[in-house]
Length: 81
Image (tube, rainbow, N blue to C red; front, side, top):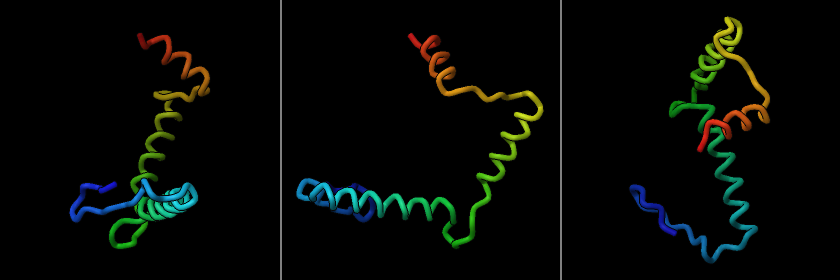
């Protein structure tokens, strides 16, 4: 498999064992988790704190409400054709 980015990266997925694929996935997950927590300069990002604060504000004001996942799924199924 070749990822078409610049520069292209070739990953031999077809010839990799399941164990190697899982190890690669785990390494990517760990790297992505770190990358999402910091920006290019290594400074923690605070955008998600702003999003959470806005959501808490809407919940407190009654503008938003929480619902159980099962209830949400039922509601979505009723609105979808």
